[in-house]
Amino acid sequence: MTLKVLVTGGAGYIGSHACIELLMEGHEVIVIDNLHNSHFESINRVEKLTNKSVHFFDLDLRDYKKVQKVFSNFKIDAVMHFAGLKSVSESITEPTEYYSNNLNSTFNLCKAMSEYHVKKMVFSSSSTVYGIPSFLPVTEDAILQPYNPYGQTKLMIEQFLRDVTKANKDWAIIMLRYFNPIGAHVSGQIGEDPQDIPNNLLPYISQVAVKKLKKLSIYGDDYPTSDGTCIRDYIHVVDLVRGHVAALDYILEKNKLHNKAIAINLGTGRGYSVLEVLKAFENACGFKLDFEIVGKRPGDIPEIFSDPTLAKSLLGWKAKYDINKMCLDTWNWQKQNPNGFS
Image (cartoon, rainbow, N blue to C red):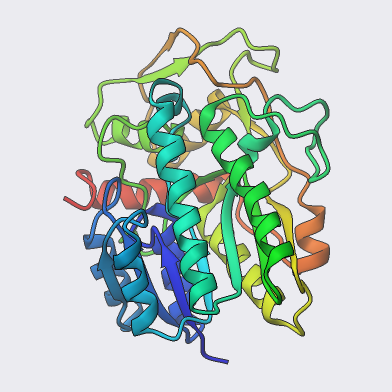
């Protein structure tokens, strides 16, 4: 069945990969993106890779009249909601902007969905809603105690979406709590391209590898982990977006989520330390990289990795790619595009 799918934040790192998967599945894609931390060139490359067209709208979801116009021009069947500010460290210094942007964008989106009778959504949540986990691996029924404003916005949106599904007949939402997306499309044509100094590990490492940055800063080496550096569950971005497509398929299959919003982890179930990721990337690129240990960042937690059992049992989804493939594809993207999309 061909669907018209609205992808918010579709020019961004994860959103652009989702567009490829949706187009390859035969769906029609409409993108809303304000290009705050993304690039229109990613849309051009998505179209070239798939030989299909994307309907693109450069606008902010907080501008309700413009959002309305998009909904009025297309009979949208479902929404994948990626749009939002996403830096943990930035959210600590700019909490007002994070709450304003992430919450109001979602409020407006759901208001438009209600007005135009669009009742299916896959939402980009985050493992940050767990905060410092009381047990590992983390399951979906763990205590939710975000450690930073970014995570708080995700948790507040999750609660809002649960209330929306209770109040609106036939709404169904899957909230995907994913862990640490890395990697890039196998073509090397699209990947993660932060506009400033990267906040995330892999784009930082890869920019050191192409000599765009001098050395990797490792934020702390005295955490209570195997080598003193933070441990995360890294997941290939292609695995991640295939999880979104699986979630959308589940929502549409026999209306299984009638008046319900559920949360599902997307991760590999395996944690890697910063130093382990650095070693895997060095194996991928074939040379050593300079690094230095610096002070810890506020908002970082020592260790977290997922229990992805629910995604497998409910969606039939499981991550395919290991850390070596993730680093190899990241390097392939960065060496082909040393300055990103610019």
